[in-house]
Length: 197
Image 1 (tube, rainbow, N blue to C red):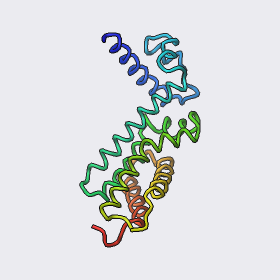
Image 2: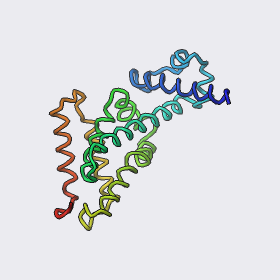
Image 3: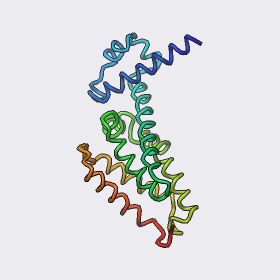
Image 4: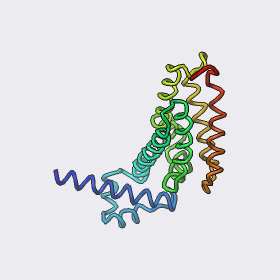
């Protein structure tokens, strides 16, 4: 059991260190030797746990996506109204993807390092999956127009949110965040049934 605990501790430490290096230097300039040295392990140990640099990056990317998912949920839970949760969660994605620890890894390097198809698949399994589930719930509860296809709505909103995230001002002025909120609200408003709750 102690051996397994030590292994998990080493992996967690390497992920934390690698995330900092990938954030500060980018994937291509980050050095496995420096990550291993900072983690007090050999380069071989890094290969043992992650196979290669790309494997390490993918593990870090999973952590980043989990953090963004948490931010989406935290923002959404600021309201008990399902419709407001959609808007707040969408704002949470844009802001979460733009934290210093996430932006370069998630928005800049990931599509190039893992390839567009793999990046889209990961996106579908994470934030898009959560979005689709929420939209299905909104449809069930009568918030959406009858002819709304939630899968297509998911693609439309997700694509727009990715672009908003890429073009988000990291100055994060309160007035700017309000504009992001209003933009998302107006965008999704077209899907809402006018006589809804």
